Length: 296
Image: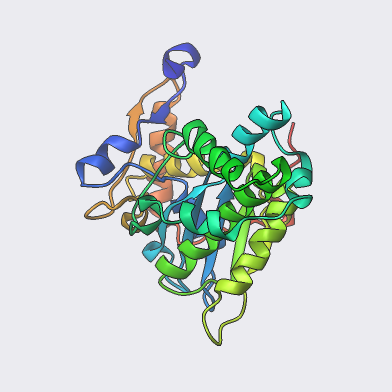
């Protein structure tokens, strides 16, 4: 539809080929996380706190060996609880959670959910960590005599611990830096709980992972996914693999994306032909102040 309405060349439908290679067809943005945030000397991670939390772990010097998976809830449980208990879309700044006390007993019960014990690659959504899960958690809080603020504190701590536990259990190496993005970064209480959880779950003798927001690197969270798919499309046009088997579970890397030629297709083919003679695959993406343009 986009190709028809704009007349421009479109690259889309990235998932089917990965699924044909035995993968889940997601996550796809992890490919760009690895190129953008990988370091030669240290293991890093990219954490996105959307409705569902997902993480990409990038081994030192080996971006194409990265793994990625959904750790569990991000904002989904907190937002569902806010709609039910506060009549609001979310817990502004984590204020309700900051005023309550988490129940360690209930958090332990909730972390016993089978999803948290599954090894990656894995993905989930609001069908699992959504309204029904929240209703059950609130009911359990009520049975324990917890206040509404305690409910938010418990769900916030659950989210933080599920991320830290996933990194401790499934990361091939403990990341020294965790670049974090997504709406959850605006929840101060969640970010504080997450920082504490990463300290507690650091391996013996290891340094706590440092939380760093993504935006100061020159990649605003709001445009990261759009940028990622532009890069995926770029690599597809060049016929280069743009997937990570460690993220999707596929048997091998593939060129993902179907191409619908538009009125600029011949020009794109010419540009690709000229580029092929002088450039190899992309191994790293570096954002500098010189190439950051203001958003329109």
